[in-house]
Length: 463
Image (cartoon, helix red, strand yellow):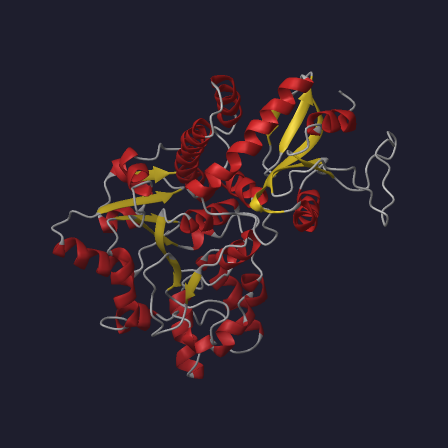
């Protein structure tokens, strides 16, 4: 893929956030698993259904691939858009699964790296991504709804939950009826961001191009506009229309572009964890050996996905409702002791450690995985009895989404510092010494237990 311009990455990670807005089109939803057809393909399929239904005659629409023209024709015949929209794959749009790009986009919105997303699509893939990750985002899809200052998704043409006649489809609406109306005002608000990235837009949208031209004129052309698309720069009509220079054009797929943007924020978060964690450990009078152990584990997070880091923070906080937790220095500090304890466990047992995309850590012996561990904290306010149910739920989440179950949950920062006795689950009747069947549930280990390393070693048969 074409490298991401350094200036765009700098704007994305600017202190305070809110420097970058995205405008996205159908090209962002066409890939698997979202798999929503492009406008031309959708229009052709709808036109065939309308002909089969007897609403249109064959060849009555001069260009069946022009959805706006088709919508105008149907409106002339029916005085509404209902029959047209009924031919849309509405349920498929509502239940659209989020691709990787959408999941990362929602994470970037949660981090404040992206201020607003202006979407010309009807599907709900972004909302579904937010629901999957446990992130709340504001969604605006109806005329006259106010746009919040915080990060929000604006579906300028409506979405799959809108009434059929509320969807912006017809040529006459797109070419002029929006001028001076809500659509233009909202576009102005979003496109006023210092940096705007357009992605997945195969053809110019009048409300977008006209608004950008107006804003560029007011700013004497000082706004930074970027575009990402899979076609070469010379073939992009949108880039030509908006006069986007070639050095601000990124030829790449939607997923790969957002992945690269998210890598910039992930790298910043790993750096923050390293610095904040070391500062806290030094404040708590840990020696240089502990600082080196901590740094060696954190270094292994370099190159990990932003989604992985968010999962680790959510699991560390024993949050059962989220698969992504927004970064904060507080989380860095709370994660510092569990990471240090992991380093000590690996060192004493002669094991290696590696982070996993599931938000866990793998313990390895001679390069072979022998156990999976979740790092957690009671935050200095919870007892083992309070965290047990939370920890087991998180283990179930990991087991449902990954190839390996969790073997151990190592919990730091618990209130009770008394020796921890072996926990026996009378319902599951687990047998810690059963080397055939293993544990019926993950082993919950308190770092307050002076024998916690030995207990982990016994479970893994490496003590």
